[in-house]
Length: 165
Image 1 (tube, one colour):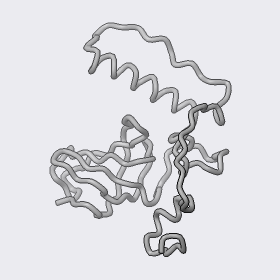
Image 2: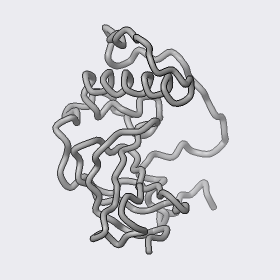
Image 3: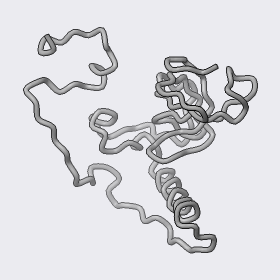
């Protein structure tokens, strides 16, 4: 029986909205039954990951990737933004741009089928941007008299920071 905080090794086989990889458990996994789905943040088809279950529902679970055990060839090796993973502006920068376009096309078509109820439609291919990074123009700021926490700060719960006292 899977529960929150369990650590699982997952083979990511598909891609969902919001940059989540999909793994389907088999009978041999510590399973809820064959076909039980786990959504893992920042995991891509072809990845084998170690992930921590953060939320368990009746038919699915959500997980956070702790370690990429075997990376997908779809991953981008060189990430050109030092804030990637912390600011949240570009959640798929570690996915090759051609793959981002492919999955976006799939998602648009899926929305037309499932939400729109269309069975026959023609969608033009997603247009690639000339700028693959640093093209976003939306910013949201939060102001506080406390220090901004990095991803490392947020993950290290044992860390005591002076302004927290």
